[in-house]
Amino acid sequence: MRHVTTATVLLLLAACDGPAEKAGEVQDRAAANVAGVAYNGNRPAERVGEAEDRANRAAREDLDAQVDRIKTEADTQADRLEAQAKDIRRKAQARADALTRSAGTR
Image (cartoon, rainbow, N blue to C red; front, side):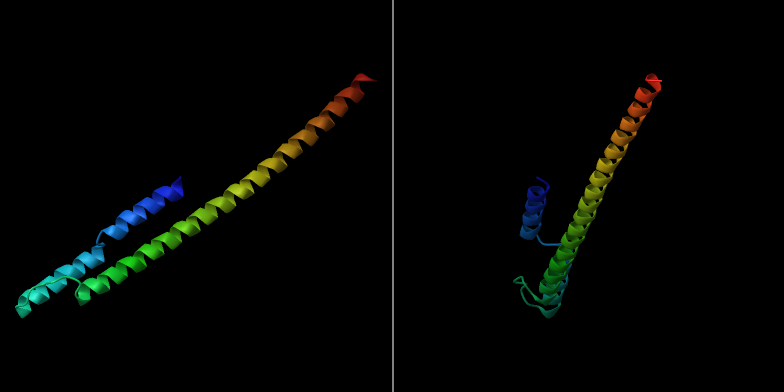
């Protein structure tokens, strides 16, 4: 379910201009106004901003993947330790039961 939500958010982000792309668009509009030409979109600063947004998004996705991996490793190790603890308790109970039985036969 988490991956579906993440994918949905990423699709929504891909459909929108990111902050760097928006900033680039503002720069391009200003440059077009100064040059006295009409702004038609997709100028150099906007394209650079779009590339920065893609790089930032990829870096966030990589960090999210690392976080997921670390949590999965921790969960796996915790499960293993819980199984060991259960086994230790079972063996301790068996020893205690054996002692109780041996004390009752005396």
